[in-house]
Amino acid sequence: IVALLGVGVGAAVATAGRSHPGITTSEWGHTVVEAGGAPCRCGSHGCLEAYVGTEAVVRHYAARVGKQPVIGDESDIELAHIVAAAGEPGPAADVLAETGEYLGIGIANLINLLSPDRVVLAGSAGAIMGPAILPAVRDAVGRHALDYLAGHTEVVLGRLGPEAVALGAATLPIAQLLASGGRTG
Image 1 (cartoon, rainbow, N blue to C red):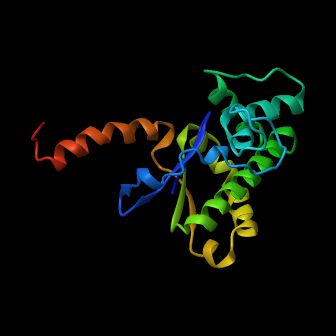
Image 2 (spheres, rainbow, N blue to C red):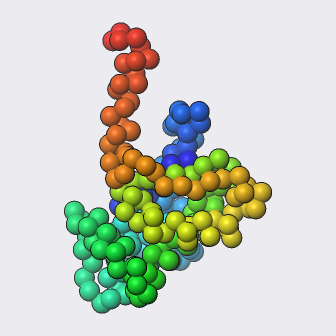
């Protein structure tokens, strides 16, 4: 499973190098991890995205320090500042610990449903905050997923960086061309 973290939060299921569009969990970010929780941009409350999406993390941090959140094009930059500040005890470290806990709960749910071999944290926010929250994510997965499933699932960081989605999309027409032997139509 590839867990994409950015402004939105989604997931994709792949087996033997092929994605499965019929069984993807692309709206995974809108699964509820806290009943009656934080408002989500979809109109619901308690969605995973309302806790681990880029803008959600930025908003939670801004609320803790009493400032206006930096939302929009600058959200990734602000997220990087939060991650840098999390090296010391304080609001940034607390927000990232909570983010790791909620993401771990969401991943535990995926593990319990789909029993994957691996969950890869990817996307722009995954690249920015993944190294900082991975221990908390793994800890939460260990506490919330079924032991016999969690023991067979590896939670790792993606290696393609913040442009992973664009790189993946760019490979689709190339893969189709190669599969068709260069024939069109």
